[in-house]
Length: 253
Image (cartoon, rainbow, N blue to C red; front, side, top):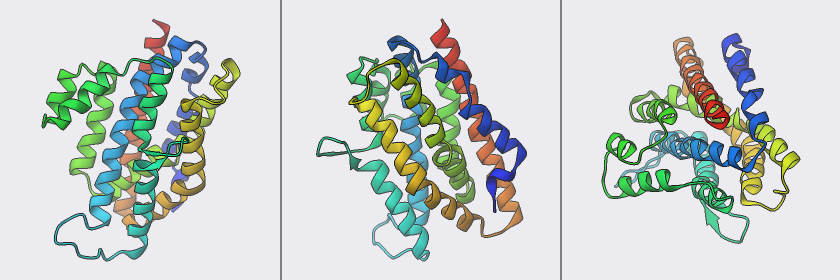
């Protein structure tokens, strides 16, 4: 199925790729403000990925081989890249941890997301940890939608949000951000530039096509699944659009 033929999906995607937010990234404080909100999207992405890994591979003990040879290969390759990628300095990090390093390099505040992760490690529930960590109010609807889908959604819906709401979208968005910050600052050797460039290459050249194949496999040509997948993708894109609008207000204020 050609997913981008859907008019509403295409419209939401166009709005996000051409959003006014990128033009507002014209000062260090604007970039920091953006990153302090966007880091939550980087975090909750991993929960979508883990939901797919749980569904498409065997993560239980005793282990048995999962039946779908192709999709288990695809998802394990994506997990390797997202959870244990090269950090550009001879080591390995998840993209979330790499993003935190980029934030610290430009002196963006990581206290809220750090507190949240620590609360989760100590056994706090998602909802309790989110409240205690004082997450920015405008990111709460976004991450709640993601976690609810990851915990209770069907495979084809999770795959759609992951693929059409993230992997197929982010290279174009990150190109806009990279272009803007390169125009304004000498970030050529920064961790942020490495992070953005790494995502553009991996998602555009490798993960994106893999994810489309995974989504097609999850829908299995069934019309009702394709329609539900499109709805999940549109909800994901709309949630990001709402968040982007809110970050614009934060930057302007």
